[in-house]
Length: 267
Image 1: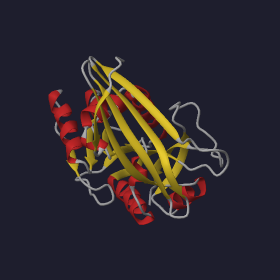
Image 2: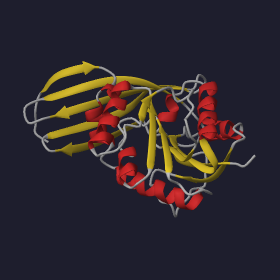
Image 3: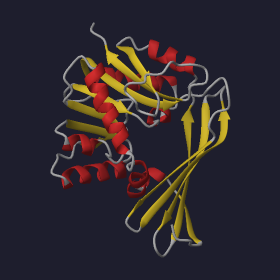
């Protein structure tokens, strides 16, 4: 990465910059993709062909699934991300199947075999009612025996939680360094305030985009209570962000990264 002085800082929503977001978070798609395919084979009671991704963002996974012959649909609240996703799909000859919408209030035209939401987008939902509504919408959208793969960070009640993370990626002459750090955490109000930034490097300049977002916090007990309230789902397995289908984890008060595999029950 070349050494440039910082020329410009922008205060903005990182999701409004899908090109940079996709470069950073789309670069390690394969581990998630392979893991999800393994989940479909191992945990679904139906043949998985139709997929749905709430909070699909730039379509980093949807496009890969489409290329493998899956029928894909996505939903996201950010119009720029949806536009980027659809352009990516059509560029490769697939249908523009992502729509702008609220993941707490949607209804799909046809039921799907599996859904997935792997990178903490669930925690953008600010209240218990919103989280419950989202899970019920997903359950309504799934065939019986279909699965929802849901990944998020829990707040550990034992040990010191991770306070900062960073990722970087490069494509040609463009490089992006992303940072995320906790600025405040109120466990009574269940609000974790997080600073976020993109440092964008080209051969001639460096630009920083800064943002702040609020995530809802979940301890292990709080998440277990929420999932137990959704009668349509059963937990079939839990993994961590290593995405190893052969290594399900045992949950404990120290657990932070979790991927729940939820299967829709028969009535």
